[in-house]
Image (cartoon, rainbow, N blue to C red):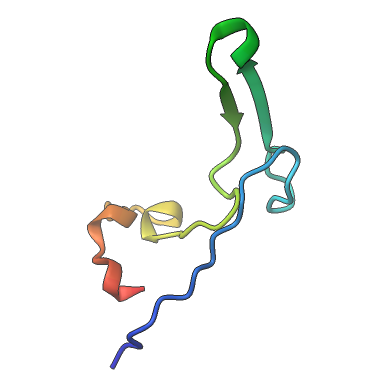
Length: 75
């Protein structure tokens, strides 16, 4: 029987946040500014092990299943 509650493990993505050892650093660049462009926008550069994430067989095996192939209630 699975628990009927959700535990929020969300991490805020921010510049230079901790990453898995050896992975690329997280870089968040603001490249549009409200005063100049009439809106704010950012570009995010990061590896797949940034923040809260889920590894599935596809990550390490020749298994074709991706995270979108699993029902959310399995987690």
